[in-house]
Length: 450
Figure 1 (cartoon, helix red, strand yellow):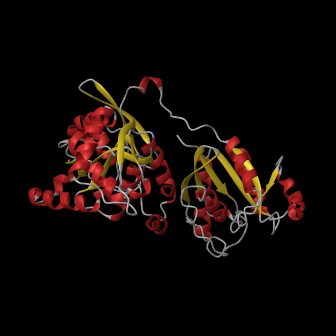
Figure 2 (cartoon, rainbow, N blue to C red; figure 1 turned 180 degrees about the vertical axis):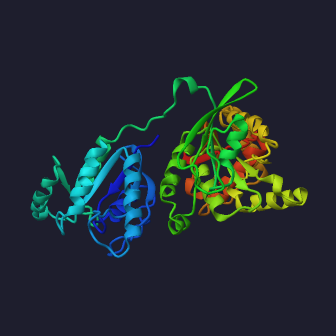
Figure 3 (tube, helix red, strand yellow; figure 1 turned 30 degrees about the horizontal axis):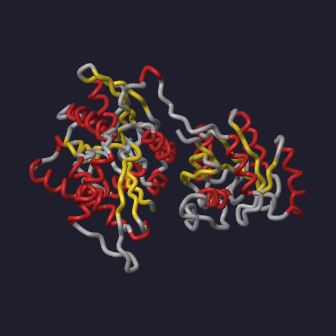
């Protein structure tokens, strides 16, 4: 599991700017993820992204501005929700960065939040933002009354002090670990994800044969990840029911406070799973949020299958199956390797069909192809469809080898890696699947020079 770092502080101290700088350490350093404006309270919902420093990977969370309860404001309800979100973020954090405003100085909200943070028992770094030269570091002195042993100077805008801060962050966070209790070590781990109210808890309850999880027609009943052990013909499976992933705009407008953090919790469930069941509501079809959920699963390289739930209420099943599977093919084209089955969790129809699929997908994720076989395969597909030249020179494919599993990963050695385009990779991947299947799992193909 990747450690979680949460940036908290009152409004307009520069949390989103620091978050953006931390996130830009990834591949795309030009992308600004969070919205930043000189308006207090602009980041009302959390934003989150993966990043790394000094070979340590972690998740960074940006939170809305924290206000002291006694400070008056025209929109008390919004401030209450923003404050509550900060509390949930603190609860999940492995490390907290309390960001202070060196330009404005210490205020009551800073003091109240500092007391809350200390009471949480979490690791905390106190950081004073908007210090961009050594001459301004004397502004740190007043912040020591907050009770911190060290206040770190930084400028989130210019990067002053940023490397020192990140060195401290890397030293403070735990190593990335895989949490796997010994008694569950051999169990396939299956995460069940989807939008709220698509039937995740109903499915697991049906599999367990008892009401293990709360089921309600109100979206968002499941607000945290819940693990359940299910036995099928003597084999045990660990099912993880995650909070429903909701569109951020809808989360805010309907004020499902706790659900604002459900995406991060779902990400953690996906991260520790072997196979992910993506539940779709057959009665509603495939919506944009379903694509986003599937995208997270694909990004993590997990095995996957689609489950069209609530099939019992479909009036013309045969015609609808043809329509929705075509829709699935068009909208989920990036995950065309994932099988699809129809079920009814409520009526327990065809739910046990998932177990053979889970076993098959796990086996496909662990499949290894001998290098000799792979190179015969490569020679054959290159001969069948010669690749175009690159800058007037022949593009030569020397050899291919499998370098990993879970998911299966391959390295392709060529004379000009820049000449191998995305559509070339897709062609090779399609040929690999036609030859070796890899059902239900993504595969990775890396291109290198010899």
